[in-house]
Image (cartoon, rainbow, N blue to C red; front, side):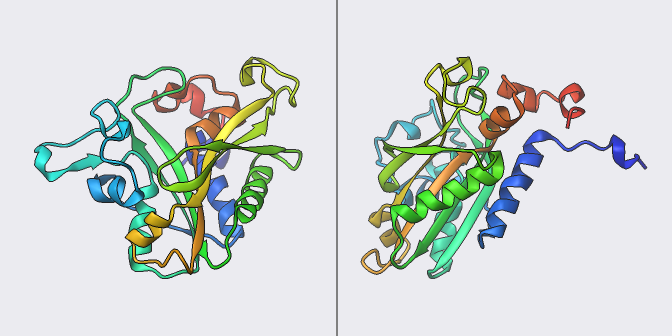
Length: 244
């Protein structure tokens, strides 16, 4: 049996544990779902148009035979749909898991990576609730000095949608290569759950509102630990893991 001091936790596993701990403290439940998904839960129920580029072979791993419409999930938002089909509001869930995209790999992209989705649905939920939740999350993960900003963004399953940036942790907003000299780092996407998504799962959008957000776990690990190539996480190189 290895001595405790010789045990190492993979950085992706460590980040998942850290993120999960933060949201559990805020009263969220942790949910999971299938990596092999159907078109309805991955796209249709999430208000993704039939002609959306994400459905193309360039972005999605479709399984044969094609008529079954089975795929490797491109996002963990599918679990939100499955949860809402079986549960009534109010609720707050977070969903960490592996997702897949059929795209070329480079230092910041891979065909497999990890996401954490969050969903809160109840009465009188507003964008202010979303902003407050994400501020708490990022400050607990990166430190109390974190400053964030919201920019308009588009995602089919939320309206309005926002991009969340945080002040660069390296240059503190002055500008450096890590933030492309902007002073800000894009950290996640979010927004108010689209009424069509709520109605698709039998939740009355006139009575309930919600917000959702998604953060790339691999990206968080790269930022927090200073790893400059996402492929290192999946290389099996123990020189990386032994640092943690």
